[in-house]
Image (cartoon, rainbow, N blue to C red; front, side, top):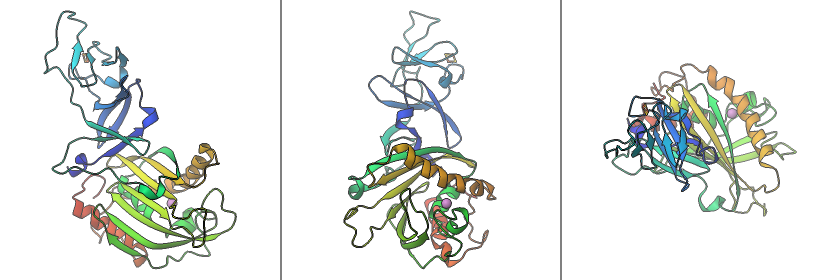
Length: 327
Ligand code: FES
Ligand code: CO
């Protein structure tokens, strides 16, 4: 399964602590915890002794202690203590499988199986947004596949209906022509425009907003606003929203957004509340779509030229050999 070699987001970095956290990735239960050196760990949520869930245990002496018989495992996954045999020195074979972990974009990322090539972490921002302020929103637990959520994020034709009065209006529903091209890691759509009554927290008047959309990995995408001509305040800054999705099961997902904004004043909670409002509008429609997995056979659903990015995304998933969350 190619998906296992990708990096997937599992939790906000601040949520991973010495209290073991149960999560699910690609239908596999994992436990996340953080040792005293600040390093985050991801293991199967299953003790190799008798299969109890580590996430019901606790960290003792900087080791994760299983809730059942109290075996303790250090940050390398090595068993260091078997309480039933105080003198026993556990051999190297008494260990748990450990997964590769890294922290980026405010999230903890895990790779289940290293692939033949090093999978890149989904990109976000780069040099053009490092001057901006970053805020994470979510998690949102959604009862649909990760690819359905990516498509919704790339879709401009729903603004006037799902987000009426916010990101769109029924009076201006046309999707002007835009361009789609392949990139080394996914897809790029340029020239995307929408007439938006309230494109962000501070919008006081409707405006034509110009975007680029980029698919940066099978379950990740980035929207970047093209700076308005003549605007000095945001000169060269591209306000962006990153979408990062954990494929929990083929039909359920955990979603985060990362905002990079030129707004240094508004409290995090207000920016997050705006994003909550928008996503709460999307969620019931997203969860109503059938099938919940995304059909890769282009004959399975109907398409128009306005859906060019979404049909390109389906072809990209097919090319990439993705099987989880698609049908
Ligand atoms: Fe974990 Fe026995 S099941 S210590
Ligand atoms: Co939407």
